[in-house]
Length: 218
Image (spheres, rainbow, N blue to C red):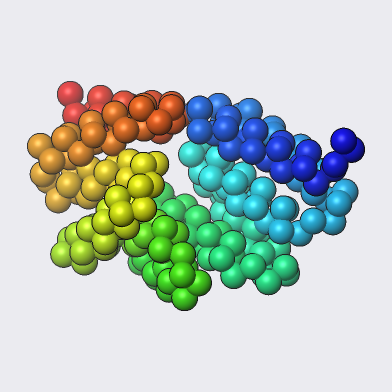
């Protein structure tokens, strides 16, 4: 129908599906095609969404510098179009990169700032995801009581909303937190629960990464 905006959105969605199925290169290719389409249209919000999605795929591929740069771009464009929610999503994405760089102090501050923005906007799902990232950061700093409080809140929100993917992500974070405090039995149990849920949802990339992590236990 010569609907260029719909085509750009569909291409971006194909990228999200590829990422979900574990095809990170395919996801990045689709997102870049969508970015070219959004640029032709001058659609700033679409550009911001695509750069944030690119950041997620780059982060999962281990390209942390490129992922951080992509979320910086996403935040700038989100602010340009006045989308506080999307700007906060990019900030929490940068917090996840900071965690992988072992900068837990910056990560917890950024994640909690994002959580406050989501709460002000009434978005409990994204607030819970930011709390999950903050919990991970607190656990890395040895603040296990704070971490446990936040992860319990995140799990309750995921279950109340029926957000199965978010619940799997919380289970994975709980497994990693247990590993950090030396509770290998809980780490293994929660890790396998998360792995089973990712697999049931068809999130092959997440399931494969958890398999690799669980293999290190043996």
